[in-house]
Length: 268
Length: 347
Image (cartoon, rainbow over all chains, first blue to last red; front, side):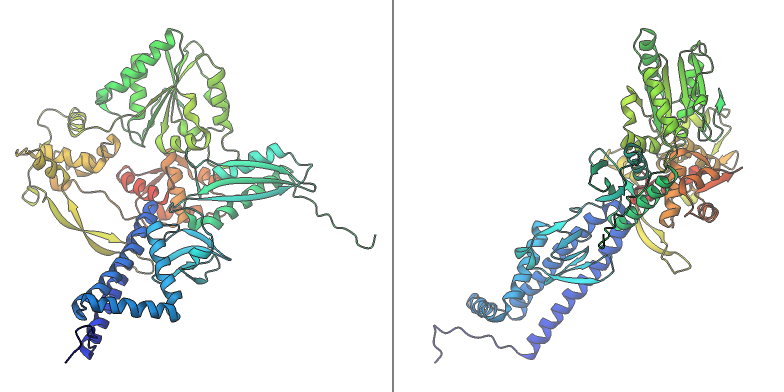
């Protein structure tokens, strides 16, 4: 006679395994299709690109969550006691070795809900910097400026500071430093840098996104610093390069020189 | 520079239909000026939006008091903006977007003009392309120099009808209901061409098209029989977004004198496929209404292959080049603005 205090362990047969795999496959396929469609739509949406992409991680977690619920409820047909047992086993599993994976999943959920970063953002975490291309269940993928795909485990958001350069907006502030010698006319140089900045094909200026030109004196040179927003963060480096190139060309026409290199003769 | 002339590319609106409020505001500013208080005016509108027609009307109302200067290309010499007739203390400067070039050292003339506004005892009525204005206001904050800002309104279907039909005799134009176009469906599918790189032909993606005019009528419970004439002007209004110049181009394109049918008024949306540099040049042309190709080269610098870019823009039916002057095609205005706003090349 069966002991009434014992919990029946569900029989996992081939049908259940195949059914579960099928549900996971369907969930995966749906996510791939939805991701493809949303990315396509977002690329057509121009300035609203980030807003459309914001939905992606939420959808991903929801679809996987629903798939898991469906497997537990409809395929395995767990009773509440069996669910408790499953929870206990999962807890033990987390204790023994799945804790990193679990932390990644929780990290992913927190990223999705709290949005410290979003798909499309430029982020820095640890030594890595790049555009967020995907926020997954386990890891966040970023593409670095030299086109490396870096997978950052989601749990790192608990232990490291995360910097988002644009916080969900398509525009992003760029700092451009240009150095001149002390003999050159700093006011003229600032004016040239300002005009190179505001006439750039990549610049974005509004009342909320102003630009600034600053000068700072150092012992061997003067540093001109331009702060302005690029209209699309994907042109971050092109913007910096274009403004620098046009400014330097204009400096050359106006007799504004780069700082001279002070070489210390070690034999003297 | 032209004096007391109008830009031939900008259409005139007979008897200036739909601009009553704007004319009242300008008259009030002129009255204030005569009472001793200077209020400089900036009239800001889209290309083909009726700026020149508005200033012509003001000139007609005050022929003895106003001097008009209409710029047709980039101003290179500050003397061009000095009033020719010193006795007339109210100056109209049409197409002020010609006072700057988007390049290093391209704001000198505009700076001098703004200085002269501060130091002068004259009143200035200026007209600006809205995209140039938005750009200049963001980077130079020019709106602080003008106490009256006027944006000509979009014309309603009735105003467009009044405007176009006033050029013809009564019943001269035959509005014909065609079987192919009894009434647009509320919701229908239409093909939206999408250009994909490396593919020769665009892919047609089916998309939903909603007939907002009829939908609004249903919600307002207006079950009325719409005549072919009303249907045509509603459609022209919807496609042109109330821009008189675009509506005029659409009217010309659809009319097979003396007959016009609703189905002949075709939607003007274009599928634009341009790279970033081409889009930037298109944004410059849009922002200044009309510009010489040599000036575009000056703005773009040596990196741009201007002949190739202009060829691409013409190939896609976005611009026209007439005696080296580039301007956008009125029919393409809506598509161009939507495309450039998405890229954030116009604000």
